[in-house]
Structures are given as C-alpha cells and as structure tokens.
Length: 224
Image (cartoon, rainbow, N blue to C red; front, side, top):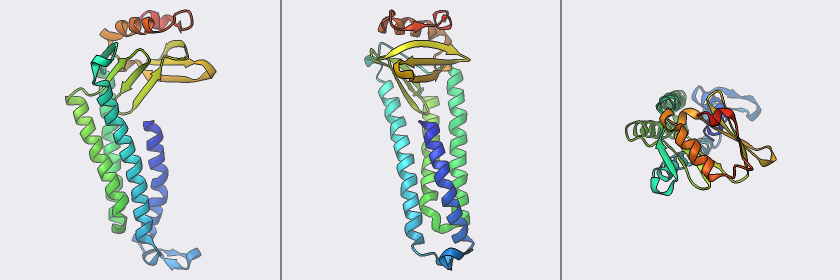
C-alpha cells in the first residue's frame, strides 16, 4: 500500500512540476497561445492539484494511525509483540527519506512557483506527519505485529492484514514470510517484523489457529 501511494504521488508530481515551471518562469505555451504567467485558471489548477495531494496524504496518514491504534489493543490479540529492532531501523530510514523528499519537493515547488502553494503545503504536511509518526514509532514503540483468530496484522509505516481464511501454505525465503492462498493469491511480510526471541511463539500460535490438514508449513517455518 505504501509503495503504491508513493508511486501515485510521484506520478502526480510530474505534471505538477511541469505546470509550476511554465508558470513560475513564464514560459510560452504555444498550443494555448499564451504564457505560463497568463495561464487561465492557474489558481484553480494548483488548488485542484493541492486537494489531490491532500486526499492521498491524509488517507495514508489515517490508515497508518488507525493501524497502530488497532494493533496496540493487545487484549484483542492471541499474540502481540513490538516490532523487531531490525525492522524498526529499516522503517526509520524509509520514513526519514520519505519526509526529506516530500519536504524538498514542497520547497522546490514553492521556490519555482509561489502560485503552487497548495500542492507545496500538502507535501510539507505529509513530511511533518511522516516525522511525527517516525519519532513516536521509535520512542513509544507503536510499531507492532499481532495475531488474532482471523488474521496477522502488521502495523509500521504501512498496515498489512493477512487473513487466515483461505490460507494454504506458509513459507520463508530470504527473510520474507509468504502466505499463499487459494486462487493463486500471495501476501508477504518481512520476518524481521518479529523479534527473533518471539518467532517460535509466533509459529506455535499460528499453527494453533489454522487447520494443519489444509495449511502446509515449510521446513524453514517449522525450524524457527
């Protein structure tokens, strides 16, 4: 989900930057027989782009915060632990880079074209949200992974829910846990999400929640 959102933001950023360059540097727009500074409805264009940015960024933020709030209710889980140290470090790095890129992108947009304040401010808000989520995730240990009777819930920079219904195979390859379902559906999460000292408990709890006659566990899983 997080990867998809980043790709979507990147795709929207290209036309936004092109329009900002034309308006900011007052470049001629031949097919409209005008120039960037005289572009009709430029305020409405940048406002619309800003609203799109805000919708994407706020939607991701709400999903993240709801995810960590849900997994923090440990009493509702059969098994629930704080995220593994290696995974927390990885998430910290990714979120720091995301925040830096979004902040730099917003500054660049505004520097090139002050009229692009709406999309620029959306990027700044997204950067600030990333930093707050990153710092609280590290200091308050918000990032967690849990098992309910129906699903595995992974909550860090993104939220993953891997349902147990329809599960047919659990394997591990290169520090990635694969859940294979009927109809060729496959979902994954990093094994580093689970602290090494808790991996055996995870496996045992997972085994107790599924029908072992229908779900295959690879040797790598059995040997955790």
